[in-house]
Length: 382
Ligand SMILES: [Zn+2]
Image (tube, protein in one colour):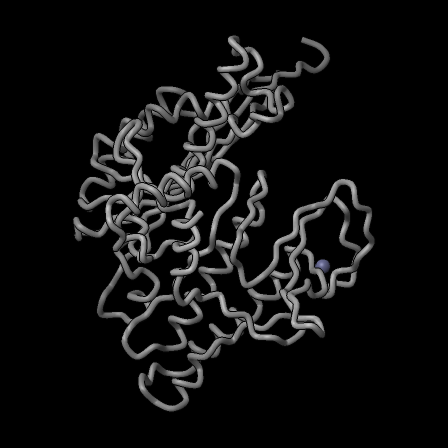
């Protein structure tokens, strides 16, 4: 055959088709799905339904350019977070999933890596790193459409983070909710509910209030609006390693949220995330690397006060530059922690527990949300 043959596959379409069977397997082993997967499924289903109401044919369903107002129907999560109570089921569940992928895509087109972060409650560091249980990560790389001599095919990843905990009453997100939009858990097809282990005041609300706030969180979610609620690990004898870990986790989650394809409005962050402005042409420079921030780029700024005590935006920074700046401080602090022995309770120790992240203007950044009562009240009143 001469010339090139262009074969394109819509990866989202393929992933969506396989996801129903993946979920079947997870539910068969009593897995609870949580986090971004549930959030993105709710959003995609909502916009999918709007699409079907408008168009009674499916030829363009996976074409994002077609009917952009419902483009989020094509949102397919890249990874699945699963909680299992029975450690023995991890292997069995993943064997089923591997077999499904091989059946669907062929042995030669499925590769995977497996990683285990096991929890050792006697080892202080492992206890902080995995406060809930063991974490298994499986990452599959699947190639579709490979035809020898014609096409190399299109690769995509599908990954699974499985947390095991023997505590049956402890449901995800294990009292460590990061954003309100991630508070839902899925226990079967169509069975989605708000978790009662968010670690926020929501868990203590009366049923009616809980249902009320649930529907408001959902409504905000489909409009890509949410609130930040990251609470830092509180363990007895608060110590610097736990603080480094919490800050690193917070930066990770926020960075992930900033880089989402569909931009989120986060209503209460210690930093301001600005979305690109299409109509306003501005020329501003990043205060970290001094390069221009392009009009189509998102950027980060710190909230500041003007002379009248009104909140304004501080100098802008590229999102990448900002997180590199944060991560280098986290790495430095981590090194410090590893060099000093864990002398819990010493004066040195207490000093190290304080907030250590600073913005380029040298102001402290505290990513720990002390309480989210105000946010909950705002939801209930709105
Ligand atoms: Zn920059």
